[in-house]
Length: 87
Image (cartoon, rainbow, N blue to C red; front, side, top):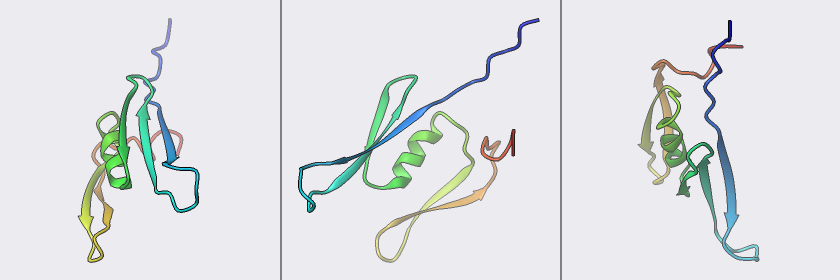
C-alpha cells in the first residue's frame, strides 16, 4: 500500500546589499519555493508573518519595543509544527 507523501513547504532567505560598499544598506527577501511568492523585508517579524501564511508555526505577537524595534513573542502553541515529529 503506498504511503502518503509528506507535505513540504520550502523557503529561501536571501540577504541583499544594495550597493558594493560597506556603508550600503541591507535588506532581505524570503521566497516560498513552491509558489515562487516573495516578500522583501527589513524586519524579521515580517518574514515570520509571511512564513506563517504557509506553515502553522505557532501563535506569535509582534510588539514594538521602546527603541522602535519589533519583537516576536511566542504566546503559545497553535497546532505548531515546530517541535512535533522527530523532537
